[in-house]
Image (tube, rainbow, N blue to C red; front, top):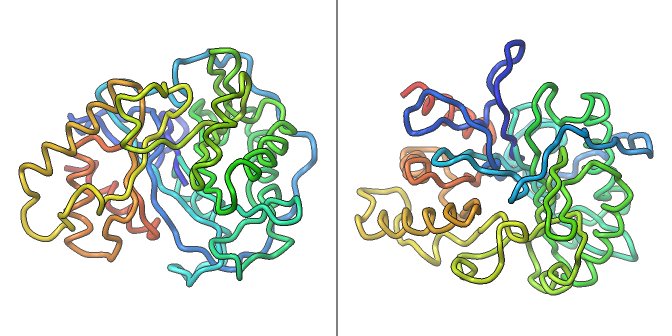
Length: 326
């Protein structure tokens, strides 16, 4: 999951808030990503059917998450699938990530018989594990309990990254119908304006979702772009996040020195995205605990990359805590 929060007097600074280059001031912006491998988590109780209303004090902004410059934020991402677990906890990934105070969460979604089921692989599908029961209803209940926010006292927006595993256009159409039921819960694009909500949905996965999303004048989700979108026509109000496979653009895996040309390339890409109000995420980065992963994470932080991908929420939490102390 990913979470960006401002510290408050009665609450510790959230774990996923990164610091500005001066290493002294937490800032709030798009969450960063840690990826946690899933397991066959039990479905949590379904929340009350009526979702919360958005706080009227939320002002529109040019991008769903907003991003003060030059500081960036980090996100942890938890995937609720049925793969070999990377933790031994029985806590469902959503709650695990929220317990670590991360600012973004990811769900792998399949459209099956008109239902949106959550699993990484088709063989792990379970009719009881719906997007609503594992994510949407619990988030609605939490926002209601916290009087309009995911984290009590914080006005930041939790990013819910939804990875479409089945054909994008039809899966998105069903997702759109589901999101509309939760009045005031989600950041919304309406007739050229972005209206922030407690949760911001970003659609990733199958690319066929793009065309129907672009055609909408009102939508409750945003699009996960690619590096090829930089310099293109898609604004941050459509694609606030730009994600790509690290290994397609860089050879360095955290061992030895980061080649100077690759470091410059990374910072140029991040700068280009930030100039357009977009956040940056890479997947397929090393995720085995050790010096190589820490070295690569440190370079991503130094380059102001917005999201870190990992299956190891506790490891990322420890890394960010240590980084704040530098």
